[in-house]
Length: 281
Image 1 (cartoon, rainbow, N blue to C red):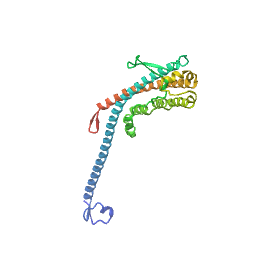
Image 2: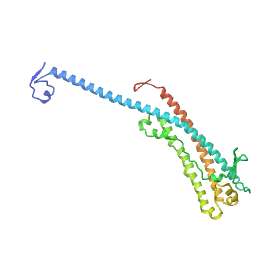
Image 3: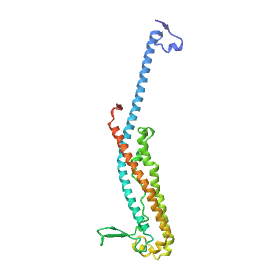
Image 4: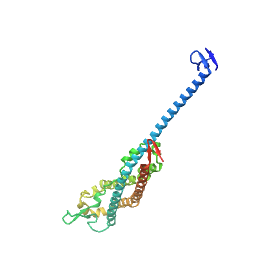
């Protein structure tokens, strides 16, 4: 065994204990240093690995929880869409009937009725055009989507297909067109109707109050001759009949497809087994 007493060189002193250097001491210290370094590396690496796996597991659980909330909201979505379709069909039919009667020579052409047992003769009479300023922009529930959309890229990549479906449903072109057509596009026709009344009718007719049936009866000839209002009604019906209805039908199908897909993925994720953070195949 080589022994160097009181070594002078710095790199020899680095591995010297006491005043003397020996090759065995150097070898033992080197092995001890390497083992400690490897052990520390393994511990640090494993710690980061466990932390990373733990983060992935927590992201997965959060994705699963939010997906369940989204699925619950989609059922409410479906109810909302079905009710909106029913309402749109009723309104379109009501105003289509009014448009077809526009040229009839009868003082009651702007008056319609519905069955009502509480009325004296069992009928409730009303003027469809008195409700012309009413509108109901398409606005399905989307509270849980707000939570979902706040996730990061790794969160969305847990299931890219479902993530894309959710974004397309809540933030895609189908919904965008529906909101636009039932929003600003329909509002345009309402504003034109209101503008016509405010800028022409009030200067010609002795009194204007569209909420009263008598107004539509007494002034039916003047209103019949107002081709602008008739054309405005035609365009609004056209918007419902050839745009909104078709878009609602497509959107309804998308909602149903997404419900099936999301329900399937949730069941699959619920059936997966985990030991701590690790999936058991």
